[in-house]
Amino acid sequence: MASQEIETLANALARLPGLGPRSARRAVLWLVKNREQALPALLGALSAVRETLVECDTCGNVDTKNPCGICADPRRDAKALCVVEDVADLWALDRARLFTGRYHVLGGRLSALDGVRPEDLNIAALLSRVEQGGIDEVVLAMNATLEGQTTAHYLAERLEAFPLRITQLAHGLPVGGELDYLDEGTLAQALRARRPVG
Image 1 (cartoon, helix red, strand yellow):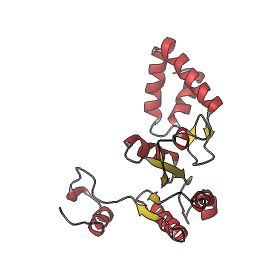
Image 2 (image 1 turned 180 degrees about the vertical axis):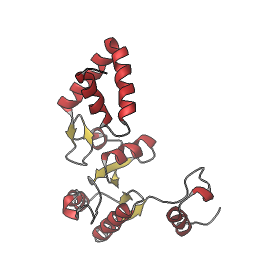
Image 3 (image 1 turned 180 degrees about the horizontal axis):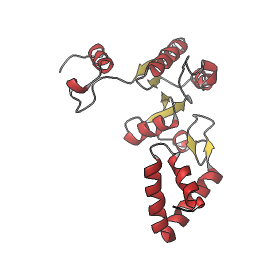
Image 4 (image 1 turned 90 degrees about the vertical axis):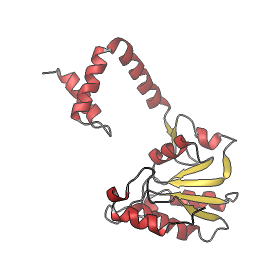
């Protein structure tokens, strides 16, 4: 049996996404074994983040400065704006280094079942950014879920009034995917989004 403090730490880690009780206990054991080097570094990093973490007023990203590093970067294409559901989606897209524009985080997606309405999301700020001008394209990078696609459709309707190009991420067959293992929704989307060869 571990002490109450160690159990409390394991329970706190188990609440993190991607970590269950067993993974959390393994992480605690590793921290205990490497406590001289690992614990001070971890505590310092957590403390620094707690003291400096802010939400970007412009896009909704989470960073240690406001505006965030992406919004403040002059090399970014200010004419292209990618709308995402969450900060995790922004980080995933930016990690790929394929989109050189700026981002806008909605803070969720429309969901009648969960009671999430348009006014619950960061849509007003998005429309305000577009109204200010200077944006030529809005990329709707919603997840390929029913709620994500509903959100994308709603945003496309709201953005129709502006003189800009509205695009959406392609959905369909993943690279390396085998048809036999794909669900019917993915196959249907891939067929609808088919394009000429060559």
